[in-house]
Length: 245
Ligand SMILES: [Zn+2]
Image 1: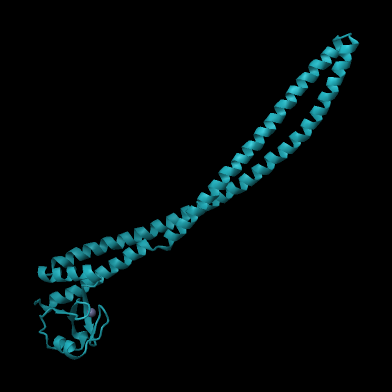
Image 2: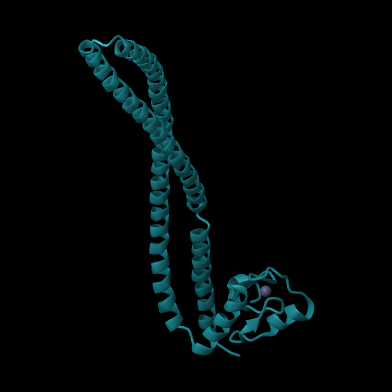
């Protein structure tokens, strides 16, 4: 196959664009922010799960406190009722019974008061634990937004450059003859390198140094012959840098 030398050198420009695109695509996939984001998100999920358990504990402690307060109110009502009855009754038997019950209610009230203090402490402790976890959650959420921002900025920058490269590629391919472009595209699809500079006897695509008959063939090729690397098959473009002329 033959193509004017000026056409062949365009393949080098094209390869440069394509290699840069590959590099950017690779960077997109491997942004350090991706891993950091995955890690922070996993951490946030763990914190949220812990927070749910801890909020449950606060609610349980509060329910227990409410129950004790309700019990205390019931006992207080009963005490008032018994005291009223005690004022009104003249029956010795009733007085004895009411006094016994009031004594028992007094003990019950005292026990409930102790339990309420304990329950209040439990609510306070559980709330403090949940609040600390909530603060941890807010901190990790803040970190997630920062990483996301930095990731978006990096992606935007790359997407800008990719847009420029796409435009340059279109303009360049339109100026390359079809059969040469096809050879390049097919080869690039296989190995990622469609064309490379031939320099100091070495293919720039696979870095193989040609010797013997292979080198002699490249030397003997006409300037408009499209030469392929015997090793990686990419188009080896000869320029003044190649040291052949
Ligand atoms: Zn090669």
